[in-house]
Every structure is written in C-alpha cells, then in structure tokens.
Length: 260
Image 1 (tube, rainbow, N blue to C red):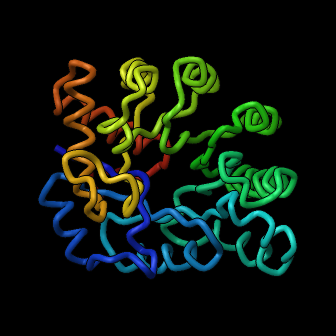
Image 2 (tube, rainbow, N blue to C red):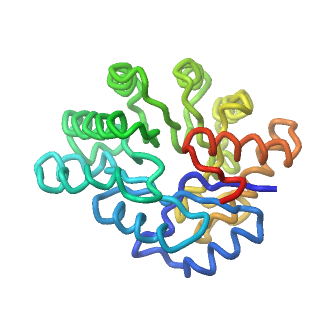
C-alpha cells in the first residue's frame, strides 16, 4: 500500500521535528511519497534543495497570497522565482491563490501575484496547488482565464456548492486533518461527496494535525490517519482509497508515486 502526502512543509527552517526521522516514520506508515510546498521564494528554494537530497520527496514552488504585497513590489524576487519552475523535482507551482480571510495583503496584489504564478504554470505545463480562503468568487474569475490549467484545491474546507464548481473545473480536492475534527456538517458532507477519482490526501504539516493527535506537531505519517478517517466517513476500503489517491497524485503531478 502506498500513500502520498501531497502537501507538507517539513522543509521549513522552523519545523520542530527532525526531517530525516519524520520521512523514515512516514515510510513505515506507508507514506512513500511527499511534496514539500513553498510559500515564499526562500522556502521554495529550500524545498527544492531538500527534495533533491531525498528519495520520494518532491517540491512545489509557490508564493503564498499573504506575501503578495511584498512580492508585487519586488521584481527581482519575482524574476528569481520564475526560474525555479525549471528546477529538478519541481512538480507543481504553489501554494498560490487568494486569502480574504486574513487579508494580510491587498486583494489587488493577491490577484496579480496569483496571475503571475498561473502564467508560470502555463508556460512550464505544471499543475497548480491552489490556496483559496473565502475568495472563491474572485478565484474563479481569474482561473477561468487559464482554461488549460490543472491543479488541486488544497486544504478544502468549504461546502457542497464550492465542491460542485471545483469538480466542474476538473480540479482535484485535497483533504487533510481538518476533516477529522470539524464540526461543520456541510464540510463533512462535501468530503463524503468528493469522487474518489478527484481526491488527494495531505497533511499541511506542521499545521492541522488530525485527531487524535491534536496539539502535536503534524507530520506526513499522519496522512494515514486522514485516510482511515475518510474511509470510515465514506464507507471505503483503505486499500482502495490509498490506491486511488496515489494514482491521482501520479496523474496530476506526473510523478510515479507507486515507485517513488
């Protein structure tokens, strides 16, 4: 059985656990592949370096919407970021998108930085890891300008209405530990309704640790707990969910995670 953590940040400089031990533990739990996702120029480069030294580890280069104000004022950093898409083991652009929950950057800067990264993804034919929080209306207006784009809506925690539009766009849906502790029935209903062919698993480590490990630092091995919870919720066998989500990751990121 193979599982893939399609979104983690264990390469961050402030990650509190030993990454080598964490990767070893993940493999013992069946998590044989993982993607280290960048949120800035610096940690995107760090993730690329981290992945280059480790089997089964890949990288995504992204500029988080929280950072939009900074990067829209820094052409040199944007130029440096553009070059990362050609680096070895980069399998996606992201995480990138819009976050209107915190609004740490002005909306217009967020939109422009998002489009900048979609342009890179289109040029290099890379999928995108989307971050969308309370911003779906503007998100779709932008995404619809890129009809060939593929990707995954990371850390999905919206409801059935948003899910329907995501599926219409043929995007994947990334589910993580949120589903193990949410009290929102619409979130659980949507998680149940995601077609197996559209589902990806993730941890977002070190954040969003699933139950029953709340309070501990999240790590990729806990993707198994997410998978087991979803199997109980959805009435599926673990082997079937693992096989489908690993194949989905292989197809989206064009990387054979069954032999990572």
